[in-house]
Image (tube, rainbow, N blue to C red; front, side, top):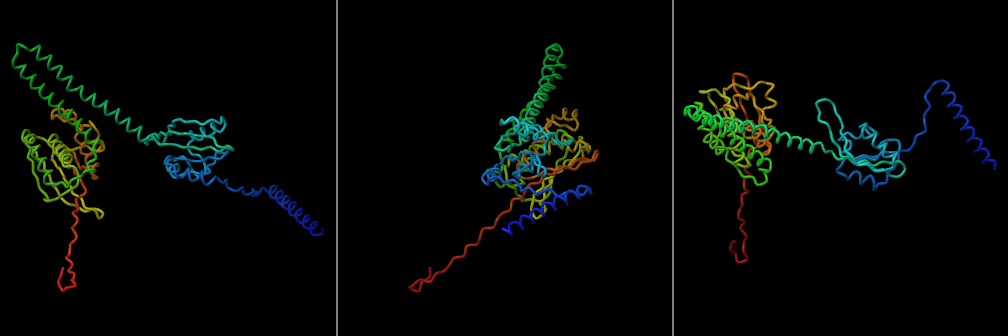
Length: 395
């Protein structure tokens, strides 16, 4: 009994001492240490479920603190430290907690200038004790793809209107010039050029659509680079001759890559045609091939150089965009569609390669298509094994 009384007295003294110490510390303006609250524990099943989700997922506590989150939630920017980061999402979490009803919606998260807006498909549900579960799918890529498709359709519609409208006007001019054979021949020649331009545009639109729907590396073949550049020269020889431009071919022979020969030939043809179209009569377009090593990997480079008009520095970043033209008037005269370099870039990317450009106004341009080289693996040597037979013979 005495022991209990002594222990109670000691405990009371400890509490009184603690209260007095806090009072003195408070009077002195010193910070008072708050009692440590243990971190909340979720069930291991819920934590495992959140971690297994491909979508960005998090569990927010009753005071908006993040109790648990998976890596996609952190990389997407839904979590900052131990708090729900985007204000739009935080307001949605609080609204669900107050109303007690699950919500599914789309959030547009604005980012810094120059960075595309992030679009999230969000589902927020209230659990027990004010705990909120958030699951978000990033739909930004799909949204941008839809925007690209809409822009592509709009651009195609605009590009098709130009030759179609020109043909319509020229046909009316021919009809009005029925008594002037010279005018009819002149208008008919212009109609022919516009018709050829329209046909080329439709053909390249179909080609670009086909390229985007086929993966050339699914059923890839070993392709001889000599065949690619040879076919490109053959297909562009007439165009070059008509503009008095000399085509030359040099470089290493016997190089090989992996992919689709038709697609690679189309890419090189577009580079050569682009060089011819933007060169003055009597100029020279040179093709070259070589093997290079970069970072321990081996590549094949196909370069197309011209001494034409060149490209301004502010145009270099946009020349691979669909329908973008450095010189619109020159492109119309030469029959360019603005899709050639887009096709080149797509073919290069689909084959695991790149396309780069060097250019200077008044000096010309050089486009370089770099593709992974085909590395032939040596077959292992098979050595015959001689086994002695029981009768003394050999097998």
